[in-house]
Amino acid sequence: MANRSRNTVNTLVCLLFLAVESVFYVRFVIIGATNGREMDVVSVAIAFVFSVFVFLRTKHDFPITAGMFFTVIADVLLAFCTDRLELGVLVFLLVQTVYYLFLVRTYRLRIRHTVVRLCLSAAAAVAPLVVLGENANFLAVIATVYAVNLVHNLAVSLFIKEERLFSLALFLFLLCDLTLGLYQMDGFLDVSGSAFIRTVTKVDCWYYYLPSQVLIPLTPFFRKRNGVF
Image (cartoon, rainbow, N blue to C red; front, side, top):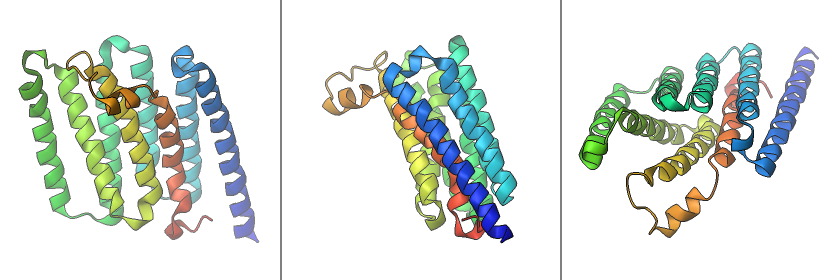
């Protein structure tokens, strides 16, 4: 009886969370993200609050909650400190590092995964200097390192059966960053000739971003080992 009551509460809170975030998403689709940055950040903050609830109910996956907390900080920095975008990207890099530590701790990944990650990060730090030359700056370097870390997290999670929902969230996260990155790339490289890039950049990154942040705190609820549902 106690488990049934617990599961009922979990289900109701989960449905309420999805309903509230759906309202935010519809609002965004109608008026756009740039017309209400405060509300867009609030939608991610609600996802963080929900992640705290999930952690308290499952006693698992604290790094997910920590990652959501840093995500809110990163969004605040990117939304309201536009003259220091590198700070927001640095915090997002921290988010991906926290998620990787979650994967390492939970699934006891081998040391080779970390070695590969470090090598890729080092190469990513050098790549903008080679490709952009004198146009390279700290933002380009840290953004490239962040992107490589996100892709590595996605690649690792795809091989973990229990993390299919987390993989989907990271994939949407990647689509968001790809959209934003290609849009920003126009200032450095001529990308107008690619039909694919023109199509991608027409879609606002928040179409992918908010769903990704909704899915991430939901992942612990849908793991059999937690026995929540």
